[in-house]
Amino acid sequence: MKVRWEAIPPEGKEISLDELTLISLQGPHGEEEQEIRLDSAVTGSLSLRRTPKGIEATGRIRTAVSLHCARCLKEIVLPIVSEFEEFFILMHYAPREEDKELVKDDMDVSLLPEEGIDLRDIVEEQIWLNIPMKPLCHDRCMGLCSVCGTDLNLGECGCDRRYSDPRFAVLKTLTSNLR
Ligand SMILES: [Zn+2]
Ligand SMILES: [Zn+2]
Image 1: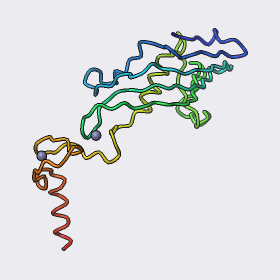
Image 2: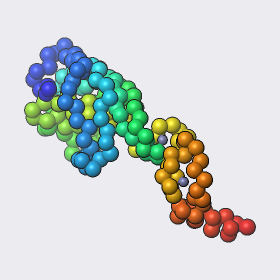
Image 3: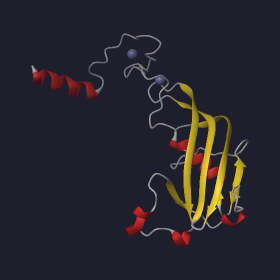
């Protein structure tokens, strides 16, 4: 669903984001992105205000995504709760490089596309912004054994991992140099 600048009445417009479907979490790199899917329906609302220079959007969304722990690869569900403010500036008001500082910097500013702002894009962007680079099942996730692949959260496998990871080899050289 797209909302054009002209379609927003002077008093503003409230839009429910509940049951917004067809949210696609395909990352910028397409299929190769780690598997992330929506675990529960999106709920939320968006309030749009028209100004002479564009559209001010304030909103909140709540949902959950299912993805994999970056260390042990177990599937986890990550709740997403986001409150955001974004300004969509009309093309002819878009600041040139040299007067970027005229734009309030506590607010995200994007160009307002001719066909209007796309609610789905806003929701997808908010979900991405709230997914950490390395999602973990637990702060202290032990990960997988680098030798046999056992999930170390479930118990020690008994492998000697001291020399299998090149990072440990570097540490070992460092510590022996200190002695
Ligand atoms: Zn984990
Ligand atoms: Zn092992």
